[in-house]
Length: 120
Figure 1 (cartoon, rainbow, N blue to C red):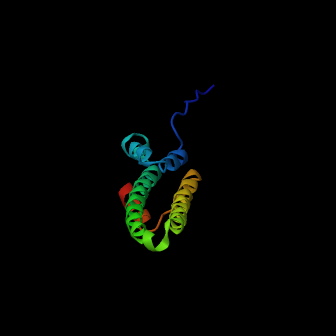
Figure 2 (cartoon, rainbow, N blue to C red):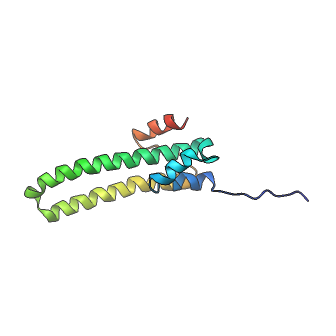
Figure 3 (cartoon, helix red, strand yellow):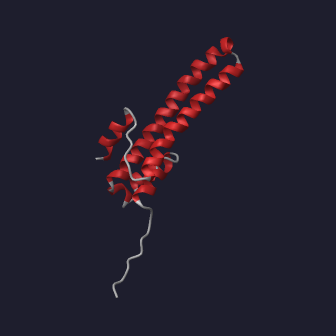
């Protein structure tokens, strides 16, 4: 009777999807073997980190712009605009998470190509 080796750790798909839940798991997957040896996990980890950085920078810039325009638009309209922006971020985040969980590489514009280069 052949011995079965127990499978430990996460599947590549689960690790790729988990990398999108804050930058902490993404950094861990880039540092810890066997995940840092798998191209698909590295790709999703890098894309997650770059998406997080882009979101922070863009949210800060939009926050400054919208805070200046609050005098013209009012707090209610400003709140609606901000909710729409955050809903867009949710959609942008959710698409690569679902694709990673299904074992697909979904490249986001601009950062997807950079992530692919960094993952090599």
